[in-house]
Length: 208
Ligand SMILES: C[S@@+](CC[C@H](N)C(=O)[O-])C[C@H]1O[C@@H](n2cnc3c(N)ncnc32)[C@H](O)[C@@H]1O
Picture 1 (tube, helix red, strand yellow):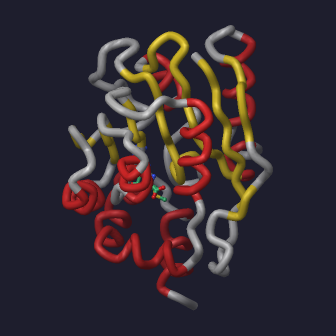
Picture 2: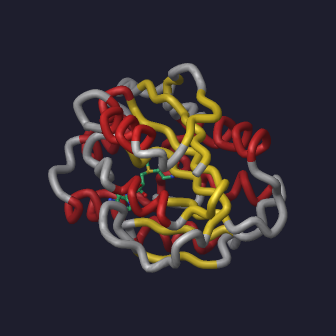
């Protein structure tokens, strides 16, 4: 089994936020190399969706569960210059800080109240976080709250999170409550096509 498969097995089986935090702290230094070896394709997908729906420049963008800054680094190359990142893992945040692409990085837990004012961000990006052993569906409430009116949320959910994890029910409830509208989506994609542990995920873009 590769290092990547080993790490994936551990993060998907995390049974608590504290356990997940510990695993990502330990993984942080080799995360970029490991997921790159697995063909991690969320950065081009998130970048493509941002290109369709979010103007670059000073637009305030929250990278929720930014991890090592893998997605933020790509968005920064495309001219998104006002990135804020939050993540559970201090270790991952240290790696993200070294990339020098975030205006602000904070250790925060998705699923708990966030210390940002209502409507702070014009766009949210959240990749690799709505999957078993990671953030709960309730995290979407706070992400919507901190998104500006007419702002967009670009995120992906694994198939397991959508079905057994309760994300589909939560997404539908937010739609029924009139809190957002689906404006774009992808076909299911295999996040890490060269890993043994394979998870298909779908990207969604919702407008607040
Ligand atoms: C697979 S990584 C994805 C990181 C980055 N978004 C990317 O695509 O490379 C998952 C990240 O979610 C973070 N995470 C897991 N549960 C979280 C939670 N409840 N709140 C905040 N971050 C969380 C982990 O610390 C880890 O950095």
